[in-house]
Length: 255
Image (cartoon, rainbow, N blue to C red; front, top):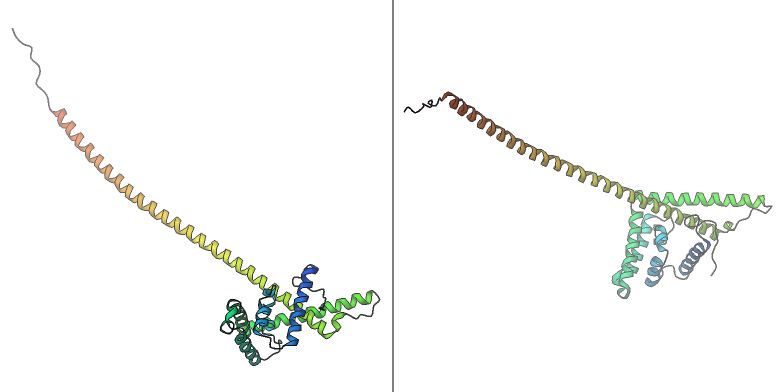
């Protein structure tokens, strides 16, 4: 099956075999769409869950099989048709995979339904188009330096559309990677703060307990000292009384 080649890959430096697999996937999906614009439930489930779909499903327009300039109203209609098509209740023999596909479609619609996230998606596609145009321009320059006519394969509309599609997937993948990295850093920061809070709580508890023990021991020391002082005073009195007492002198026995 024919596929378009391009110098743009999902992460910018994918090995040829991975890019070839991606191109094959893209071509197969598009061929299926040409044969059946709606697709059967099984075809839709397979499309949304086949290997590598994690990256492709980051693009809500790809998930819903609509163009970026599709109106929100038409996008909602397509979402409803697809969600009914892959709904688990409609696919009892493959309910688990159908549920996963249903969730993917629902997530795509929620992304487009929200003004902020929809704008981010459109920004990604706009940037993908700009980068693709720049890439084509650079290819033309190289062609002319080599004495060629400056024609490139992306001059063909289908090839150009594919190049934009690949670049779009790359940018969505990069955005997702950054999001995950931020999530990891945020989780680590929250963990660090929590550990610091626990450490401070333990330190405060220790200091409170130490202070309590110190106060108790100080009171014991004060009581002991008072008892000692009281005992010392009694001894002094007794000693004084003993000094004041004179025993009778011993008289020699007369014969």
